[in-house]
Image 1 (cartoon, helix red, strand yellow):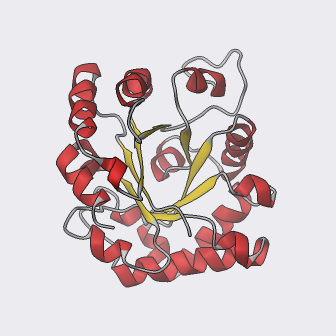
Image 2: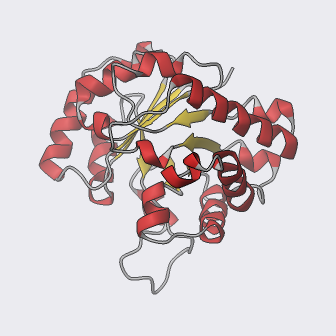
Image 3: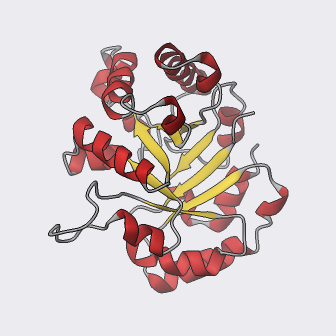
Length: 250
């Protein structure tokens, strides 16, 4: 059975005091009774605080990005070893904002993926199309190319460390959401592409998350779809009650 995952991507939100308040609010939510793996991704500056505050809970800590190099003259960057040292177990790679705003290419993301695998991180690898590509009916081609260039250099064993997060870019922070049927269609397609590259058995092991304006009022319907294994949550993850309701949607 695939792991059901709800991950909160905090993006560039929450200073240290705000992070403490949010993790304190999450600590009192009894996620231990759930079969869902719960992950949060605070900003770099708050990762260690989140780890220390939540280390006795089932909540896992993710970084929002990782550098592809081990160390060196890369001002402003964070290395894999640095992330390990502050309790990080997941990393997000390929988020649409990194691709669009910071021009991260598929080739760079492939390098980051290899580095993260080498250091034993679980990876949430983000793929998805923009509105123009969806309107042109190119969304299947886009996600296939992103998988091929970003992940398909990995061995089958290495791919087991990867969770795929499909994010329709046109539905991030816009209030728009792909219908549950649209989400299921493309999640099923992603699984089909994985099966063609590796095997059906492996494809059936890989968790595929939906990331696009998931809220407590739509999560249950989206998560009920056969090939949707959870969500990468943005804004709603900044409120402990909303986030907990989304986790409980399973």
